[in-house]
Image (tube, rainbow, N blue to C red; front, side, top):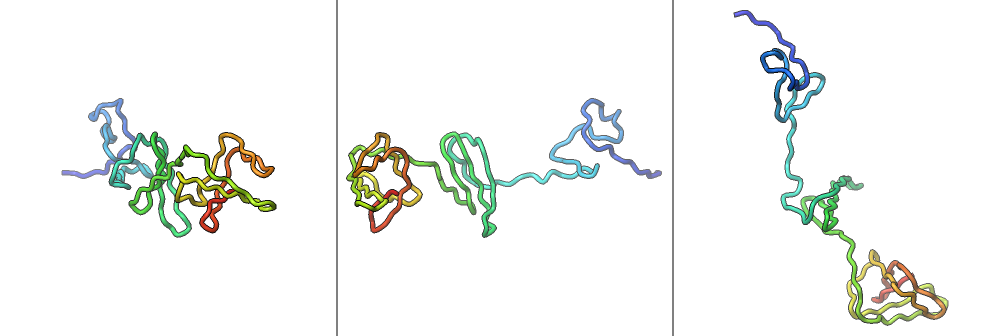
Length: 157
């Protein structure tokens, strides 16, 4: 039986029948073409083994300065980051206090002390938002202020 070489035509042609194609591809599954040659498509693996809440709307991957991979997942219900197979919910939180906090200031200091019995565990990543302007010692507090924590008290600047 004589042998001969056949050069396959790259790409999938669904217009012609397999008999008419002779040296082409009529159907495929999980392949790609690179330099006119067919290669198996690499497939995929699960990056995170558990489902996230909501419907995913956006993903953003990055690598930090220590070469650790991160993937942020924005869904219809929350925002989270997956790092080394651990999911952390970083959805911005909001707490509305029912009681009027104790607000005090010291003359010639740029900080204001706020004590609210309903709020605890604040960090420098948190902020205070005044819905209604408050006048205190000639200062009008209105809008968003970053929290500074010092000596066990919550301070805004």
